[in-house]
Length: 175
Image (cartoon, rainbow, N blue to C red; front, side):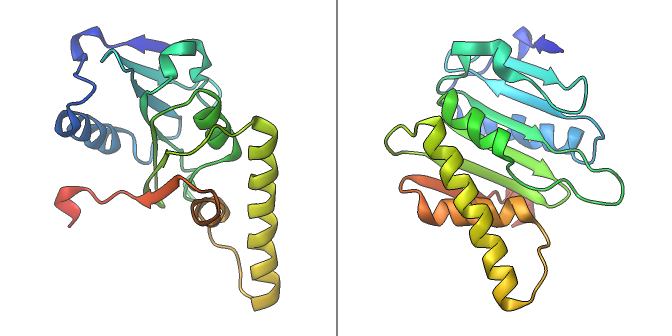
């Protein structure tokens, strides 16, 4: 389901206003059992997308996603926290050339941005799989366990894809 929140249009470069809107989103949807996504287009349009079967399909926004600033939650099932960025998240991020993608879950609040050359989808899948196996290899060699696979993959990708910035978002009142 897609809702256009016309009354909430915001200036694309209003970083403080967007941060407040994203923080409110986090308060409203952290721990939800269904996925929600908030999209701010370069034109300042604000869309709230709600997942119908757990995941949200933002593809309905098509070209409006290019350069957009997006936040979404990963639902918790009550026993396990939602993790970090999934392969689907990374694929959409690169496919639609999203400016900034954030995720909130029981694990935390994370963001990715990319300032590099375009990555073909096949290359992204190859890199994601390489990160997946690098994380498994590290665990295998150390004998430790994997606590949050997607976070470890995102950390590896942030270190190994030139121009990809993966970061934990610190909310001002958390500092």
